[in-house]
Image (tube, rainbow, N blue to C red; front, side, top):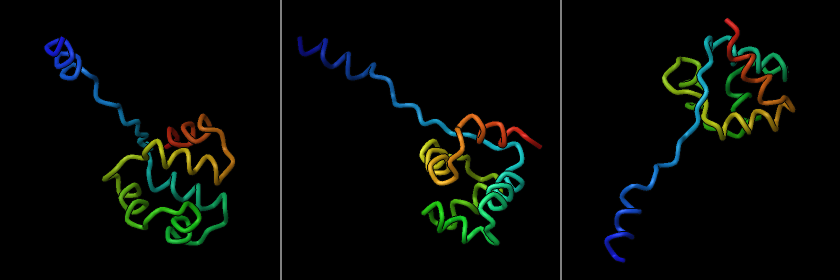
Length: 91
């Protein structure tokens, strides 16, 4: 029984982290800012309650948008996730 338990532990799947990559990160962030009439990325960070380096790294393409951040944007902007993803695909 112990061997079977160990085998199940070793073959357990690792949780998948979903991320979203805008095709034009600076344009996507600028569009979000325009929607809330925010003048800076710092204001966007405060509205979304995220650290400023996160938005900076997304803007430069160093990181993707996490599922958690996508949900936060959905809640703050009252936009469907499908609309946010459509906006991400725009050039």
